[in-house]
Each structure stands twice: as structure tokens, then as C-alpha cells.
Amino acid sequence: MKTIIVGVGGVTNGGKSTLSQFLHQKIHNSCIIAQDTYFKDDFVVPVDSNGFKQYDTLDALHMEEMMKEVCSWKKDPHEFLRRRGLIAKDSSTDDELYVLIVEGFLIFNHRPLNEMFDMRYFLEIPYDVCKMRRSMRVYAPPDPPNYFDGYVWPMYLQNREEMERITSEIVFLDGLKPKDEVLAAVYEDIHKEIARLQVLSFTT
Ligand SMILES: Nc1ncnc2c1ncn2[C@@H]1O[C@H](COP(=O)(O)OP(=O)(O)O)[C@@H](O)[C@H]1O
Ligand SMILES: NC(=O)c1ccc[n+]([C@@H]2O[C@H](COP(=O)(O)O)[C@@H](O)[C@H]2O)c1
Image 1 (cartoon, rainbow, N blue to C red):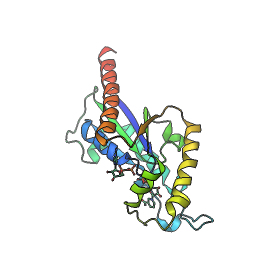
Image 2: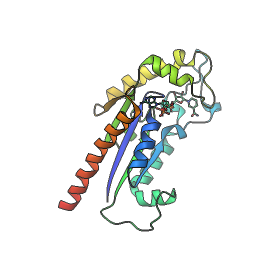
Image 3: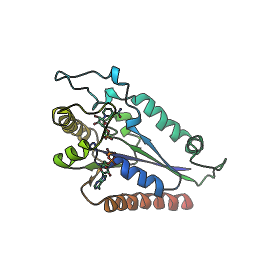
Image 4: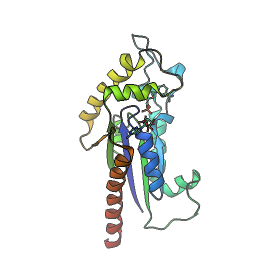
């Protein structure tokens, strides 16, 4: 059995979910673990000195639970897919290849998770486009006035600096390019890696 863990990180509204869903649809035996399903309850997330809820830090996320989920996939990907209803067959063959897509805005800032990735992508968009896309999205709870300028963007810059100190093996993607172009380029890259591993498993 072969496995590939792909990390899809990037700025808020950079296009992570769009890319991850596309990859999942195209890649056989794949599934997604999304970081934004691990946010802690609002009442336990503290506020900073400006009164902004500190959602854009690893402390706002149940990272141990997320790690458990990733490790559970790694241990038995076939069973993981079966439990999620993503696979019908009861048994798997030894030459099967499984792909896990882990997506989220702080996936490369968490060292233990970062170490598990075989491939890393990071979607970037400039400040003005990010602000505009974010203003169209409604989170739970919704962004309060000035949240983007007063908290989200400064935290992005800080988190990104920390990420670049932790890891250098990241492919940066221009999230301003047309969706089709971004999606096709990443799919092609992963497809090459899948083909490489499949050739390896025939020759070893
Ligand atoms: N390459 C792109 N060009 C233009 N809009 C995009 C692109 N990728 C994503 N979007 C749009 O940006 C918004 C945020 O995308 P999403 O994938 O939810 O971002 P994220 O998961 O990074 O927060 C959505 O409305 C989506 O349709
Ligand atoms: N429970 C939630 O999903 C929730 C609540 C508040 C803020 N957020 C925002 O989600 C963002 C990260 O997710 P995206 O990368 O999908 O935008 C962070 O910038 C954070 O401020 C999410």
C-alpha cells in the first residue's frame, strides 16, 4: 500500500477548499480533512487587547483531534474511507494507493502536522482581493467591523512568517490565476507523483 499526504494551505479565502474539492473529485481513493472543522467553541476563544476574538491562531483549533484523524487515516486509509462511506469494497489490495488532502489556513504552522506532508501547496492572493473575498463570506460568528484590517490580515502576515521559518518545501500558488489553471497545475503535479509511486511499486 502506498500513501500520499497533500497539504493545501494558504491565506483565508485564497481558494483552499475549491482546490481541495476539485482534487478529491479527480483523485481515486482520496479524501479531505479540513482544518476549519476543528475550531473551538466561540466561548473558549479569548479576545485580544483590541477586543478581537483570536480565531487566527493554532490555540483556537483542536489540533490534537485533527492530528488523531490524520493518524487514523495513515494507519488504515481503506478503513478510514469505508467508515466515511467513500468506498464500497470491503477489502483492499496491496498495490492500492491512497491520497489524503489536508486543507487549512494554519496547517504548516503546526510542526507535527507539517512533518506528515509529502507535498505542500500554499495559495496566496493580495490584500485587496483577500479583503473583498472575505467580505462576501459569513463565518460563525460573523466578522465584526474592522476585523480584517485590525486582526485577520496582520495575523496572516505573522503566521506566514512563522510558517516560512518552519518549512521551506512549499509550492506557492497564485490564487489570482483562473481557477481552471490553478486546479489543473496542481492536479498534474500530484498525478505525476502518483504515477511515480505506481511505477516504483511495480519495480520493487
Ligand atoms: N482562482 C480563483 N479565482 C477567483 N475566485 C476564486 C478562485 N479560487 C477560489 N475562488 C473563490 O474565492 C472564494 C473563496 O474560496 P475558498 O476555496 O472557499 O477559499 P478558502 O478555502 O481558502 O477560504 C470562493 O468564492 C471561491 O469561489
Ligand atoms: N468556526 C469557524 O469556522 C470560524 C469562526 C470565526 C472565524 N473563522 C475564520 O476562519 C478563517 C480560516 O478559514 P478560511 O481559511 O476558510 O477562511 C480564519 O481567518 C478565522 O478568522 C472561522
